[in-house]
Amino acid sequence: MKIFKKNQIVIYIVALMLVTAGYLNYMTNDKSSGSSVETSIQMESNDDTALANIGDARLVSSNEVLQDNDSNKENQANNITASQNNTINEKQNDLQNNTTNTIEQQSTTIQTNASNSEDYFTKSKLERDTMYSQMLETYEKVINSSNALETQKQTATQEITKINDTKNSIMICENLIKTKGFENSIIFVNGKSISVIIDASEIKQEEIAQIQNIISREMNAEIENIHITNK
Image (tube, rainbow, N blue to C red; front, side, top):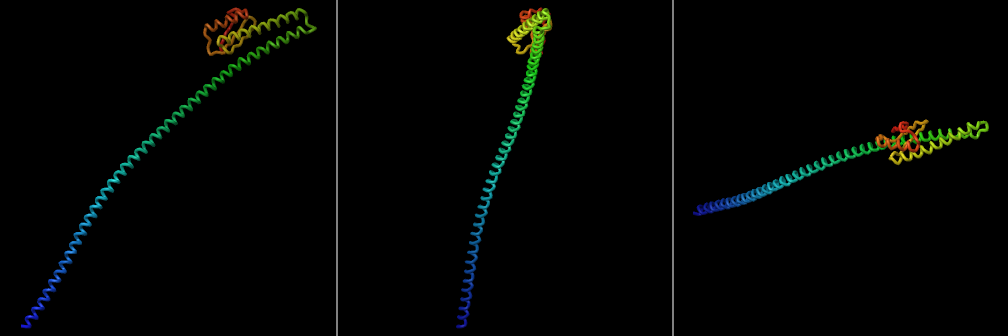
């Protein structure tokens, strides 16, 4: 009877130990499961956050790309516009410089031609007046010479008067021609023939008639003996 009781007690103890071990194992598994669930939830939460962050990152990156593209396009457009403006400005400057150079060249040519033309009339008048001065000097020497005959002195006196009259008539005619719009002109007298040179690209028929009338009146010359040319 006592042996049965001891065995029964041992069985109770073993059963209790088994129950205790089972309970502890259950509690351990339950905690592990809970931890797993929490870990899983945390992982899922982290994954969702990561996915959300990835989505946000992609969205920001896309906007930045669009902005960069727009900025690049704007910069390219600005560069193209600047390049076109520079090209237009260069062409305008070249055109302006070419035009300025052409005008300067034309002005220089005109001034040179005008200067050459004016020099011609100035030089020709100087040579003509020098010739008259030499003639007057020669006749005056005859008049003042003690060896000259009286008839020679009279002839010299007449020639001096004629030369002075011719010079005065030439001066009057050239001034009157100037009033007709011709700045430069020169008159040469050779006996009855009178040559008139006008500084003009062309002379109209009515202008020729006006000049002929001036020469005919002031120098007592025939119209057919008056020859007008332009230079």
